[in-house]
Amino acid sequence: MRTWKPTIQSLFGLLGGAQRATRELDDAIGEIQDAMLEALGETGMKRFPAVSRRIQYAPDLQALWYLRGDLMAALSALHGEGQARDMVQDISEQFGGLLPRGMSTRPSPLGK
Figure (cartoon, rainbow, N blue to C red):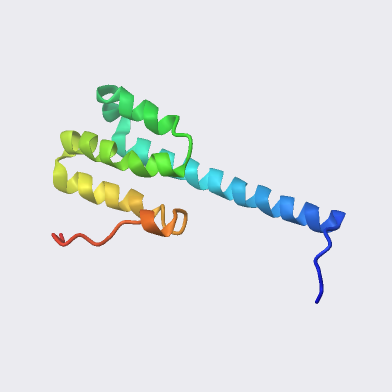
């Protein structure tokens, strides 16, 4: 039976992979934040500054996931529920593959 002996090269490889994954996750978080703020628009950011601020300063991907409800409420007030649902659905798709399995959306029995 062979045991794995860490070497300097393998440790740097592991760290480099973690840094790359972290960078990619940070980029995805930034893109989702931008999409959420863009959906709110300038008017939404003025009418709902707390939602805007919470999106801008969300500490991680899970926080952004749970902010979709607040975003939906704000967008519903701005554009109506139907359009807000479509906008939030587009944003929800950006989370694909980034969240733990149990946190993904399920198909609605209500349909469209």
